[in-house]
Amino acid sequence: MAIPPAIEGKDVVGVAQTGTGKTLAFGIPLLQRLAGAGGRGLILLPTRELANQVEEALHKIGKTSHLRTALIIGGASMYEQVRKLKANPQVIIATPGRLNDHLAQKNVSLAGVNVLILDEADRMLDMGFLPQIQRILAAVPKERQTMLFSATLSPEIMNIATAHMRSPIRIEVAPSGTTAEKVSQEFFIVRRDEKMRLLEKVLADRPGSTIVFMRTKHSASRVRRTVEAMGYSAAELHSNRTQGQRRAALDGFKAGKYRVLVATDIAARGIDVKGVELVINYDLPSDAQDYVHRIGRTARAGASGHAISFAIPEEKRDIRDIERLIKKTVPVSRTPELPPGRAVVHAPSPSPSPAARRFSHTPRQGSRPPFRGQPQKSFRGRRFNGR
Image 1 (tube, rainbow, N blue to C red):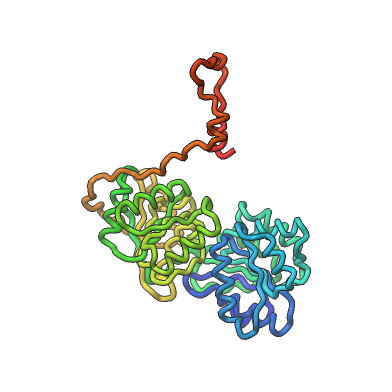
Image 2 (cartoon, rainbow, N blue to C red):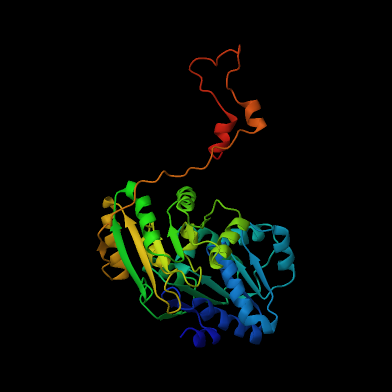
């Protein structure tokens, strides 16, 4: 539905469930327009993983035309990115932060952009990304085609979007917030200290490729270690990992090397992995719209899948918010008999470096104690507090 008006050069807002082919809905018209009229396309995405995936998809459909792209994402070599930008790419695929870095250093001009695409548009136009997007919008020509795609678009985001578009055509295959057709869903209401035991029970009862979503990167690391202690192969994906570690985790999960991927919401948007049978929301998302994107990692492209969410008793209001968004009542299942408690696996404490030992204020034998009332400062304390 989106391809004909997009090929004609009209501005388009596309809303559809996850897993319905939005990448090709903007990718095919983009390559068609570039082949006919020339110019340059700019695709903005919220995560590195999604940017990688979009570039791979474009090369599949554009390989006969020898498509030239530049992937501009954080965690990768600036030198290599500058080299690709100087090669006059037809399409720039970027995350906003890194693209703004290149704009600030005058490594790239966006004056030739005649097609602008925002994938996962609701995330791109929220208050976190909006200042970065506005700087990019100021650098691209006003006379351009703009396309936005997402599974969820609130009225507030639509108002922001249409302010930068020319009479956009809204194509809504399904109402905003609609979940994939063949995903079954259920909630468990459990105490916080029962979550790990329930996770062990679910993983034992439901074999198959599984994504476990967490709210924080620290809890993702902790849960991944405990899942491995249960005997399952697992990887973690979050912003504390290097670009190489993130790529290895996702590629390993896609290839079946890892049965379980423990991730924060950076894996909730657009990531396409075939055969994910189960999504577990170990923590409920902070925003109901993220629930739609999370469970959209299963039941993609007409396949079936299942989503299980753990909620503590105080989160019943969050469950109602989710049900209101998806316009569906999700059954609350009875908690099964849980396995015995399992010790949570913690990372070993890092050994202090020679510098830390040298600058530590631990009193030596015969040394004077610090002045009473003056707090002891420590190199290690400053370092591991992230300062």
